[in-house]
Image (cartoon, rainbow, N blue to C red; front, side, top):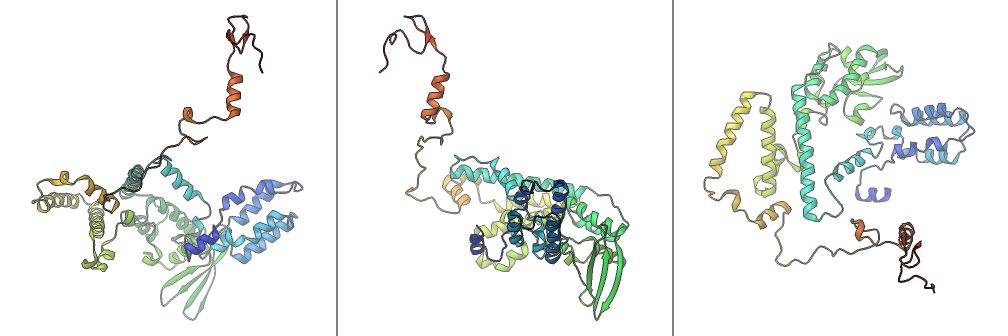
Amino acid sequence: MRLAIEKVLPGTRHRLCMWHIMSKLFEKIPKSISDREKFSKEFKSCVWSELLDPDEFDILWTSIVEKYGVEDHKWFKDMFAIKHMWIPAFFRDVPMGSLMRTTSFSESENSFFKRYSKPLFNFADFTLQYNNAIDAQRNQTERLDYYDSVITPKYVTDLAFEKQLASVYTDRMFRVVQEFIAEADKSCRMISMSTLENIEVFKVSDARKKTFTVTHEIETESYECECKLFLRCGYLCSHLFFILRNKDVNNIPEKYVGNRWLKSELLKAVHGLTSDDSASDRGSNKDDKLQIANRCHGRYFGLYQRAFRNKDHLIALDNLLAGIGPQIFKDDCAGSSSIDKNDSIMNIYGIVVPEEITAHAPDVVSTKGGASDKKSRIKSSIEKAIEKANKPHRRCGKCHKITDHNARSCGRKET
């Protein structure tokens, strides 16, 4: 799979699932280690840490395996040899790398779509159920967007940028960022500060008593922290919040807010919808029917989002939409009912129905273990023998014994 990913998806990095690897840890620990719980705790704190760089990880791993005498154990040696494929320390420079440690995301999506699909679905059934699944996700997104617009979180500090981030981040993500803001305000400490030409260098200690280097380029007003949390996840760490607080920054620069976790991004580019800017760059000459439809969707969602916070704006938008219909469809007497079945299929699949159908659904054959109905499944000889043995015997009408023969076969010798 790794070679296929490198070939089909160039520029990506294949990562092994940490959960599947670490789930085998306890059974791999030699029985000679008396305190296996302590070894497991130290080993997991080393492996799962996102604050270690590759060199620090190598040193800590080596010290743990030597301390417990498992440096020559085959499993630990093999896992260390492929450490660049699964240890977070080697993915610190990869955006979103910290969130892709396990296969839980894909398994969650598989579980979600299984609720809407079955193995025996034909293509039309699959398409309809897939659209239902997407509608369910959109409904959930709009519901969360509504909660974000009406819920006001409680502030834990008096910092101005905490209120700024509460207004732009989703409620769930703001709670994550708020913990870093609280840590910066209460637990972080300045260890040292120095200036090198146009660069300020700060040493900041956090709540875990770890020290990280924060650099500030004065000309470009750019900040960078040694922990690289912003690069991995898209939001600032407590060390950078501490420096910004000490510099009396009231508003976080837009480039450090990102765009993945914003409330304003929830209704943009959903399921292929394009924004106004991206659509206008293509030019009207290159727009086909699908592109125009996507642009209409994008404009509607953009207007809806802007008008949602104000009741008067919503009323004006509703009146405007009500008046647009008669203007557009004044010459259309038949309305939507005039669209025949072929046009509906063409709108869904994007192709015209061919005159001659060459592909048909395969004939259903009865194969062993392959039928959904238990009655139609072909049983093996072992199953038949077990059922025959478990079948209750009847009384023979000739010899009056409870046995497996009847009056007709009574007294016959089996050959």
